[in-house]
Length: 124
Image 1 (cartoon, rainbow, N blue to C red):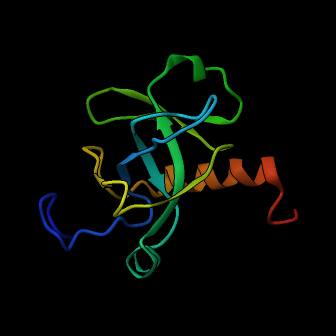
Image 2: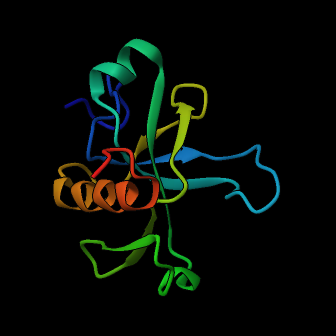
């Protein structure tokens, strides 16, 4: 994988990245926040679009039934908001690797399962 400073870096599925959420409106998340990527790296590379679930460190989501708690390597707590999937042009919104890195397959699977429970996309 390309390094943080490399122009060759492309977000990959199950990676946590930083991305700019502004401009925003209403209660949408503003500014720079983490996102768990659900789209594939080849999709991101070809389209410049990344799809994912936003993450926040706001404790107000501790009892949110649509949020999944995520623990960082240093004990930090984050909340993955499965009811607010986003798609962004990752190049134009200055996406970059997050310190939590890649390989969050279990978190991704749990998030997709929760997403399906909310939106019933898989029809079961």
